[in-house]
Length: 200
Image (cartoon, rainbow, N blue to C red; front, side, top):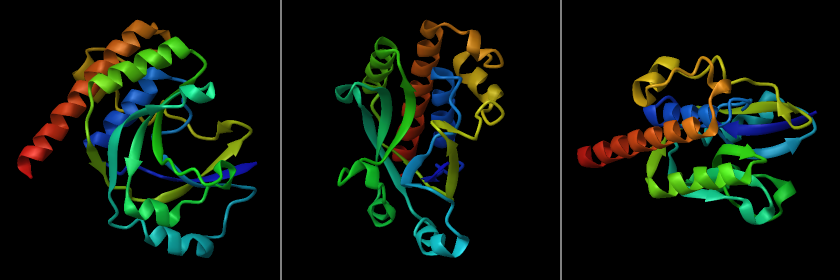
């Protein structure tokens, strides 16, 4: 058993879009969008051991600052890069040495051509956004599979309004349809960020 500690993305529409992207691009995804900040551990830490770390999350802001990938490492992983001063304060991922790369994964699969297409669309629809995490929580993994599911978490009605497609049977969609839906969600994200900037 491995235990990772992750930050959620809060309850904003931006967080909802990120979850929708991940589910559409890979319906087999086992967890909602998050930032893995600590671990892996061999067991779940007792509550009091995490209280100080969790207190750093309250009122914190995470900036989403562009799209990235792990293609150079032979992985079909596409993610959004993140910044946040408090992230360094709580970061502990010894398996990665001194590497510090907080991110939100939206696709992690074996199809490199599909991953490249996802990256290219995301790069075209560049945006800077902010999310506000509400918790640091454990993800308990058995092998490579986290014991979580997205199917009951995503908002089908919301996705249908933006993309015109119902995701009740998303597993049957071809990758071209998934990419088209992803592009529409990227467009929605840009509009939200532009509206927020106008208000500021």
